Image (cartoon, rainbow, N blue to C red; front, top):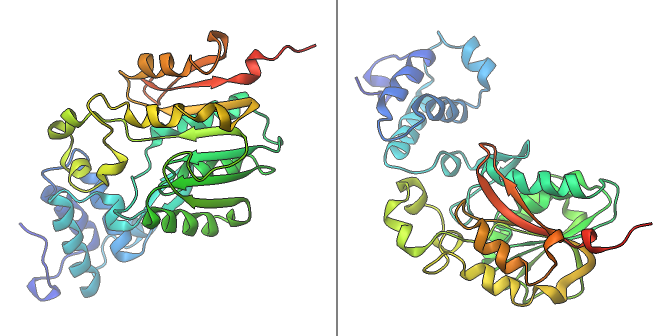
Length: 296
């Protein structure tokens, strides 16, 4: 049984529409979750509202909208692009096909910053390849006395990042610059954070269709071994680091060792550290130059 594409094809209750939609989504690993998120979006309801109105008939406009969303999701379009929003670090971020969809596992970088720097410190932060601005905005939300710069080569991505910073009340502490990695920057930074493209080109055929087919390739792929972006960044990074800088870089689980070796050229071994994602998988590497300073 298909979800009606018009209210004239039969009256369907909200709870029934949710069940039917989940059955329609045969190409996703999370059909029930996807169906619920899209139904909330189509009807402008939260979970409590879906429960309270489960026995109400689908409104005609909502039924048509929901059917269209489910059809697009079944073709592979990511849920976040369909709703236009993705939560990261408990903050809502606008997303469009011009930016990479924030992943919860990137929170490992925010956790690493919080573990190594005091919330009240006045830090100068830069987010390289800022995309939606999620990493920079998350850091600024946790470090209220800090200011930051987001850099991206895409003007369309920067427009999204600026909008997110403004919506979160962070525009006064965040600036966004167009350019390649370090190119538009001047001065030194206390925190350098980056989730650059790191997928090897040869892995493209094996990616999920909602990633390879819809998210921006420039934010995903970085040469034969996936390390080209790190080479571009780390080649000139030393000149942009403050005396006690903290560097946080996300990478693939099998890239922690080569990334760590590259970071080791900028700092002694005792300054190096690695990060793990929510499942305990290696997720990134960094350096903490504060670890190299002698303390009384």
